[in-house]
Amino acid sequence: AILAQATSASRFYYGFNYAQLPLDITIALTGGLCLSPLPSQDQERPADTMVLVTESLASLWRTLNVELVIFFVTLTFAFVFRGVSAKLTTVKPTKVSKFGRGSKDGSNPTSETPSSAPKPRRAPASAPRTRSGGADQQWPRACGQAATQLKQRSFAQVVDEVVDGMREQPGIRFAARALDLYADLREQLRREGRRLPEAARGAKHGPVDFYSTLVQCVVRVGQCHMIEDIIDDMVQQGVSRPLLFYESAMKQLAGQKHYHLALAVYDRLAADGLEPSAVTCSCLISFAAEIGELQRAVGFFQKLSSLTTPSIRAYMTVLRVYGRRQDWASSLATLRDMQRRGVHVDSLALNVVLATGVSAGQLAGAEALLAEADGYNPPITDVVSYNTVAKCYAQHNDHDGAKAVILRIQRRGLKPNAITFNSVMDAAVRSRRTEEAWDLLKDMRAAGLRPDKYTCSILIKGLTFQPSPAQVQ
Image 1: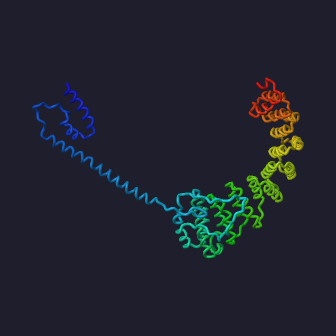
Image 2: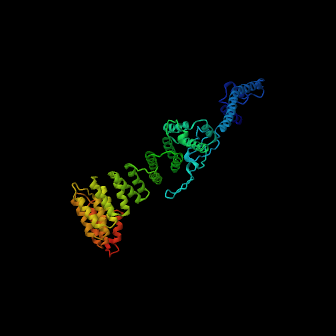
């Protein structure tokens, strides 16, 4: 019984392990491994068993040697290819020019974009910048091979390459390369003591087009602060700066939200004795308002008004400027100027002026303007207009005046909103008429409006004046 169990286990083990070998090899290898019936004690094993095993092993080697050769050849090629690739992908670091990232050969920029290069720290726009003299300033040059290629080409060819290339490939890569070429060209002009208009004579594109393209390049690579240095170069090189050049530069800077720099470019425009167009003046109003230079914004608006009738956008910008200054008189005068020039006054302009009156504490003036706007045909008042005046009544602790606003809204066919009720509640609490504030809460809910956190805050403030248990609850 024990022998039978051993025989069965042996058959399973060897049958499983040799199942995937060729049939002849399996037969040979298992011939003496108890997969056949056990021989009797007087039966001798075949004499050629070892011969069959040897031949089977040789056949197995012939089957596997091809795969082993392929494996070792593939492994060898992998190690060789890895070493060659490591050498090819190793790139020497290049220097960064003042305008962008240099390239190793001057023609193929590296895959690293110029924006990854450390940018020079710039001073705030309000502080005067110290300069070392435009073209006489020693700037970092690009790589040596780029300078060698520059010597092999004329200045005119470089100018045309930069302008045409930027028009055909308006991307960061070519912009960085163009700035590297300009850094070399600039250094070459300095060494030879020449000026660009003379050196690049015969080019298809003029110097103004060339420098305008450079402005586009510095904006594209994120070095907008270099525009003033380009203008310095134009001055040193004797290149005139037309109005179109300045306006284009300011437009690009505004697109990047560099309003300080855009105003600095305007200062250069004014220093050259040029006058901005009406469109530029309208933009300058917005630039100054964005950075909080309110007086400059007003000055630009006055200049625009002397040139033409300002647009509704310019009027709205200056009205908001007056609102930030709480200048009620100027705000009202601007509204009258709109009416005199035939500019349509809508509810937006009216509400800005009313808000200025509220912030300036001009209750009588705001109330008179609201009544005037109610009398227009058609009226230009809306719920926001009434809410603004109701807020002014609340600031003056005038509950009766604020409550009358609700009736005026309803007579106009409008519906008071949550802000309306909150403003009138605030007026009631300020006047210490808390019972009427709670009555307004009921009216608010009856109108289908939900109290908000401002409603809760106002009513809690009213609990300081002898509240009833029901109000506290």
